[in-house]
Length: 300
Image (cartoon, rainbow, N blue to C red; front, side, top):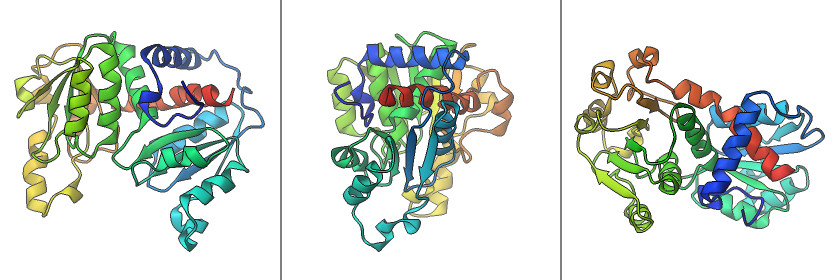
C-alpha cells in the first residue's frame, strides 16, 4: 500500500489482500496478541446509520486492547454548527491514533485522508467504496472455496450499492466471472464495467436469476433501495422479482453460498436462513477478525 490509509479496495493488490486475509484467519483461530493495540484510540466518525460495520470496528479495537471514541450523529457534533469535514478531521486527528469514517457523500473518506495526520479507514462513502466489507466478503468466500476463477452473481441495486462496486473490483484480481442482475436504471455503473473489462474481467448481464442459478458459485444479494423508485407500487413490482427463496435455490450448485451485506428487507426469504447455502450471518461475524487485521495493519 502507498499509504497507511485504507480508502478503496484499489489500495490493495492481490498479494496485499491475501496477506490481510491470512492474518484475519490467524486472528480467527485465536492466534493474536490481545494487547496489540493497548493504549491506542480509534475515532469512530459515522455520519450514516450503521450496526454491523460500526460495532464490529469497535469490537475489533476492544479485542486488541484499544479503545474507541465517537461523536455520534452529525447533529451531535460541530458539523451541525457549520464546521467543515476537513476541520473536523484536523481536530479529531489530534485526539486519536486512527479514524474510521462513514459518510453519505462519495469521496468524503478520501478528503478526510488528505487532512488527517493519522490513518483513515473508509467505512463507506455514499455510492463509492466500502473496502472493509469487501475484505470480509472475500474472507467468507475463501472459507468455502478458492476465490480464483469462480462465477459470482451480483443482484439488486448495483448502481448505488458501494458493496457491489468494491467487491466487483476485488474479484477482478482473482479471474472471477461476474454475472449481474438488476432493475432497469440500477445497473452496475458503465464506467466501472468498462474499467473491469479493460482488466480482462468477463461480465454478463442477465434479466432473470433463474437463467444462471445452476451456474454460479456465489450469490451476492443487495438491498433494492425503495427510495430510488417513484412510488411503492413500482418498488414492490421490482422487489418481488429479485427475491431469493428455497425453491429458487433447489436448482443451485451444492456448494453455492448466498451472501448479503445486510440489512436485508424482503430480498431473501427468511426460510433461506436454514439452508446450507446461507452464509450472510457468518459473513457479518467475519467482520470482527477482518477489521482486527485492518486495524493492526494501519496502527502497527
